[in-house]
Length: 312
Image (cartoon, rainbow, N blue to C red; front, side):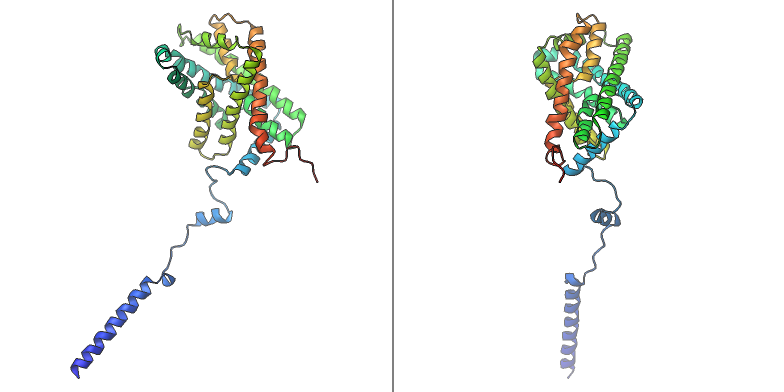
């Protein structure tokens, strides 16, 4: 009898233990931690931090919205912010000449490496300063404001106002910084600025035009991608690769040339004002417009936007 009772108690204990284990292991009865509130809000479309990078359709619409805002500014505002951007790009070109242009031994032994140095140190930081502070850069505006016009969200009059005011402002800012760089004496007797500007003003019209197209294709891709980034590191990454690439490739940016050519003229380059405009700025500017508006924005405007589409 005692043995039977002990056996029954053992069986009951084993059964209760088994049920306890099964109950704990069954996922149906497991309490799961709830998702963080911020995650739930983001999934449901509520308030929360913006995504690090907008998806392509939102990226395009954001670029158009930026173009509308730029087009709506007054002539005075656009001009002043254009002067600021001219100085920013001038600082970038100033650094590029100071660092990448002062490597003659590297250029002789490894010209590819010297081009990378010229591109990596200088113009990327100039564009970052402009984008973060809300400056008006003509080359970027060819894409943003141009897209806004072709979407029917601004007028031709406002487009012309923005392009002309930003271009003149960029030119004034570039001249100011070129003069200050010249008076600073930091470039010493380095020949880089004169050599670069002389080469740029010796190009045939069609070559300068094509280099302008290719240059602003990359510049406006940098501006376009950076406009969809919500973090500083994202904007810097979006800018650094295309901008360093266009410099390393030897392409022509009208605003950067507004700094480099006058600086070279102050330093004794045999370039006239007519040479600067006819042989460089005019063909490069026209190429920049084609590169920004057609090469960058047209593919997105005709697929994600409403370019040339008739209203039903």
